[in-house]
Length: 270
Image (cartoon, rainbow, N blue to C red; front, top):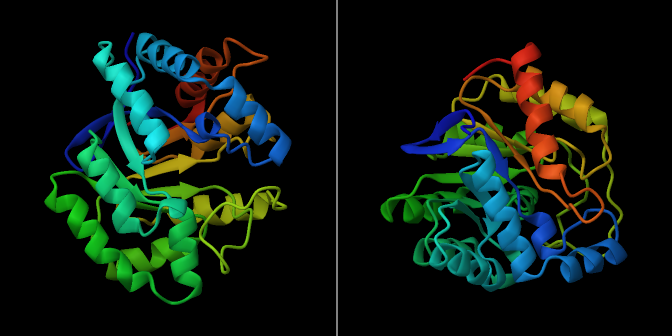
């Protein structure tokens, strides 16, 4: 089975990309669900999802460049898995440079700067600090990207930064002026006005975009959410979706089916 592919720089990735937040207990609901996800997602459960994704034709995974994810990917690859890893820097481990180096040294095929870090730097008028990190990633031979929750980050990048792709969040759920890190039990807001603003801005960006949090971390009806995303994705864009199949074992296959049907019905083919 083959899933449509797009390119980030010279790297070909599946247009449906497997997200990784649930693997590390980031539910974007509350601390209780965070803990449930961490208990559920043992190394074996994560590797089972990787294997299912590969069977479905999904070639690519966005995952945190932390020691937990690196360990699980190493085991998966040692056992014959082929999943491509796009590494996400991790605020709690230190600077964007530190996270990027984790990805570069641990088998990543591309790397991007975490949206919480770009939000924090934008608030403090320090987005100019990102270019050396992007250069470091590219010098290692990997496509370099940046994520964010605010259109202003990508508007700045269009004018002042040189990179290969963007990770554009549909929502701006929490203030990141005080810290780039995710704070447990912080109140998050998912406003459709943010989604409208981001998807309108995406139409004018010059780089490929990975659309993420399209399901609002499980708040949106999947069929409606994928139909909306497919209608806003340009040729060359991709979508990133995390799953939590504890109560719905076929969630990954169903999500892929809904996405592909939405693209066929009204999206713009790559």
